[in-house]
Length: 254
Image 1 (cartoon, one colour):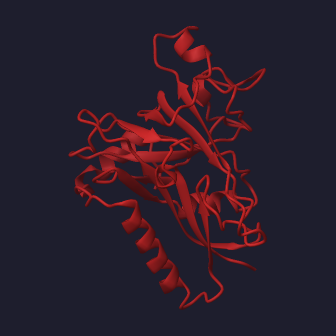
Image 2 (cartoon, rainbow, N blue to C red; image 1 turned 90 degrees about the horizontal axis):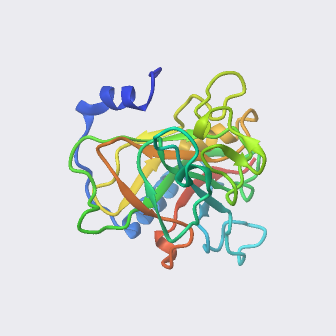
């Protein structure tokens, strides 16, 4: 599908929206295991990689090693235009962070190196857990979240509205340049509404395939929604391991 932007895509999908059933992370993990069992009927060598900081078993060569491959930075290009502390500094990361529209959300990356580079990607899911509070409930009206892949080797301790790494400028404010050698690739590698409870799950199969196609380096993605939803999402610093961002992958080694 070719669309002008995320707002255009949201408008096209609005009539298809239904309120998602709330799910726990335990239910999400059980459904993922069921997907694995089903895929193994036609791909008996299929394996999984759970990319969640603190999770063991991602690397088949060292199953006791805990995964520690996420990096996250909050980017804000909220107006007014011009230098100000909200835009020119790199915010400190805490156990939760704001995730909202394209001008106030999170740039994230998960290390995929524990998956063989020549593997066939069969399925993947992105799991994000929001902090629920009285004024932070899942949306009860049509909403859309998208993942936009980055084309810059950014640094979590120095990226901000103007720089993706120390001394290295985005071509446009907050990476909003999509011409030749774009800051972010002009594609959505995942899209869909938020979950009906604390946990949201998006099909991330196309996203992982995007980084395994030999043409796109894995520089992560910007996750953002529309004005119909606002969340504070848990980061890799969350005390509860199961609340941390997770990419669950089913792949078949060559």
